[in-house]
Image (cartoon, rainbow over all chains, first blue to last red):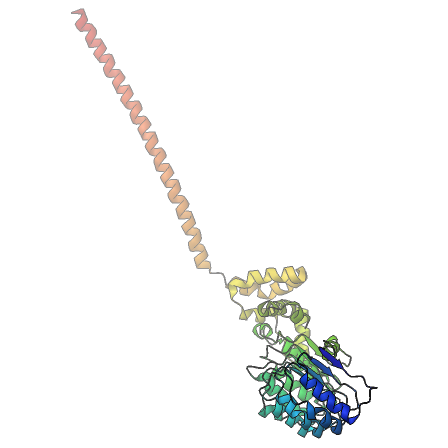
Length: 256
Length: 146
């Protein structure tokens, strides 16, 4: 078995959650685990991860849209620390995951291979942990529906300006960034040659914020500045709709 | 954005953006207005460009944006283009060309003179020989008669 997808309607006993964790840990072929929308609470997370403390094969782990918070996340720490193949991690859609949880997650994933991190629709307001901890392979960061505001944009701007920045896709819908946050992001992308997709709808971005991106993509102040504009960003969303990338990523997280 | 998607090569994308957004006066005017940048005429814009490239750029404008845009771009830079011409060098080049032609023609003329002189000299020699022969014949006749 290479894929385990749990269905929302399936109710498992406490013992079953424990056994499931052990089974996943002992399976050396399992690559993808999706436990999306399974009503997993902190208690169930503790049961599941009591036996699941490592995996030699899992590359994608999706526990999005559940009911756990920081305690559930803490239960995952041994698994995240001892799963060298883990590259896609989805814990979004859990309203109890807050800034402290984010700090825990960033600390655990520091220096690891994680490439895609789904943290949409949580309760995160502070992402400054990313200033301290380094996710050197991070390509996709989904932080939509978290009120990270202007300060969050500063942290992300710092990430985007780093020489070794690896971020290719950034989802920041409904993050209260406003024009100021949009301008910060646009400025940070001036010399960035990695980010290809940026989604920032529902952020009260007016003409001022949009013009900052226009200047980023085609700086009209001189021929040289036009020539040296950002040529990497290929998708920029100001309006809300599910992009093909969103669909693909969610699909990927559920597939394999 | 479309250009970023279409051209995966950095240089090609930059070039395409310059052609699309800078070398079209209307598009550039709109962009400058949107970005709060002071719009400068194409003449001022071309001040940044190496003068020798201007004819090629004008040709590019004509090709990409049509004759109307070509003339719009050409008009303000005609005085500039004229001033780029080094008249002294042009005259020197013309003088050099004329001198070369003159030298060639002089050479040809001298050759012709020589040929004609040769021909005349040969003709003179032949004429003299003939008269000497005549004299000799006359003398011989006399001797034979003796």
